[in-house]
Image 1 (spheres, rainbow, N blue to C red):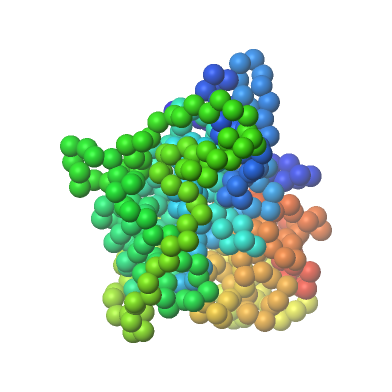
Image 2 (image 1 turned 135 degrees about the horizontal axis):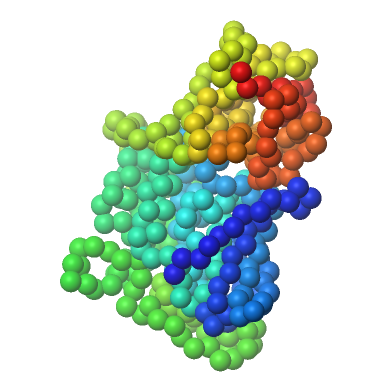
Length: 401
């Protein structure tokens, strides 16, 4: 079932999401367990009952839309992001959760910059709101949004998604590549057939296994029975627990990371409705003339203008160049010495109402007319709006020619 998700912005408390489900569809087992021991991959929520409906309110807080983080990542970050994306769907049985109740729309995937992990919206409904098609579409969209500086790794990922994609095999592929990066956690190795349903076309893997059914849990959450049930597998939608001590042998040769394969043709610059193409802005860039953008009014030695040429539905990201990655990760990047600007600082998006700016949980903040924006909360721009990225002179005025 598809549930309507509404996003609301509050400039005192930040953005939040609201959705409703019929009261008779509420999954009490999952709800009680989450309340007792909420996993860190879920966005916290509270709920209330009104006229036969259960309303859930999810506070986004400092989390940012994953879409704002499109671009090249280091191999370590890239692997860890995929693990944080798929891991919760495999481990959710420990909380008696149903993977089909995760909202898999990329518009509602959020990223924690500090933990460097993905956070999900979860609707505790026995009906569920996502199937394998939504799962596969999410993986495809993320592969377009997020790229990696290692072409060999990226090509392996894209091929795995296109050909018989399943989460366990995919994580095993990442594990086979991880020996080059000692600080990346290894992915759990599990039998792939635990996650595949036998169908008339066995060559097509499905997300859910043959044990995919509701299990009645009658005892109260937090009791010894509940604990035993969780430790023995719990709600077996994905047949297994999250605590696994298996290791993966590291047998990848040292030269396997050399970029010998050509990069595939699609990436962030080609994603409609996600991010605009990366542009080069230098000190010699001309002042704004025929396009919307930012005109410099500060006192430091910074670019005099930032052109923001995006169509409706596109995103223009602003940050600071990161020498450790070696490639641009934002549509516009300040010099690496501009320390007050975060590597992923802010984004400007365009919709039917016009242009809006969003702070991406930057360390020094984003200010509009001397007002500090709450993170991940779009703020409408008007001609003459003064925008400051941090507090060290990166001050601009928004203009529309």
